[in-house]
Every structure is written in C-alpha cells, then in structure tokens.
Image 1 (spheres, rainbow, N blue to C red):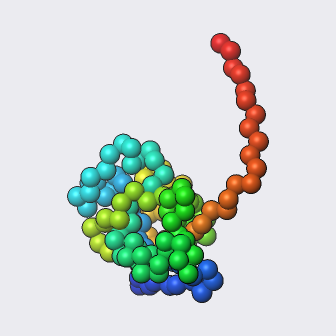
Image 2: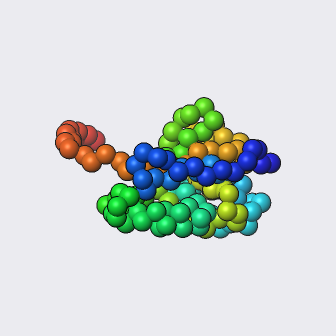
Length: 144
C-alpha cells in the first residue's frame, strides 16, 4: 500500500522549518485496521496525528524561538499538508503518536477534501501563519 520512498528534506529558507513526506491514512481506516483509538472530536476537528520523529526533528532544530526561528507560535504548531495535486490544507497536531514512523492520521473529512486514498504520500511542512494586522467583523442579527 506504500508508494515511493520516504525522505526528509530541510528547507534552506527559514531555518527551523520542517518538510517531510508521510503516508496519509484516514481516521476511520486507522481505527478499523491499525488499532488506533479515534473519537468524534478527532473526526470533526482540524488536528492530525503525526509521528514522534516530527517532534524530535523540530526540537532538534531549536524551534523554541532560538536562532532558527520559532515553529511554536502563540496559537500552537501549524502544519501545511499538500497532496499530489499540490492542494494545501492547514492543521494543528493532536498527538505525536502513530503506529509507524512514516505515517500520519487525519480526520476523514480532511482526507476526502485532499482527494487522497489510504497510504498515499503527502508533503507535510511546519509553517508560521502571518500575524493578523486588521480584522473587520460585521454582525448580522437574525430574528425568528
């Protein structure tokens, strides 16, 4: 079910950034075939399970605001997942625990929105979202 070779790349631009190729599995597949406990809050959320080696690599880079920049933002860790069609989506991490070191587990809706099949390789990289400078909110009142 695995396609290609697992490789890890480090971005030269913006030290402290991680770029890895992992094999993506949906939460329902992981629960049924990989013995992973997946509950409703995972399935309806926007956080994924990543392997422990991702956390180890980020810690090794000194991502706590040191010389290499900070991957741990005020809102937590943010990752960009890109499929074979280069369609990105952004998510957080729920746990750094997966059955194998080259797989990630994502909610079913995220897996479907990226048009993925079980075990297909995706690119995962840590990103720092831009800071919000201005936000305009328009309140709508709906009376019944």
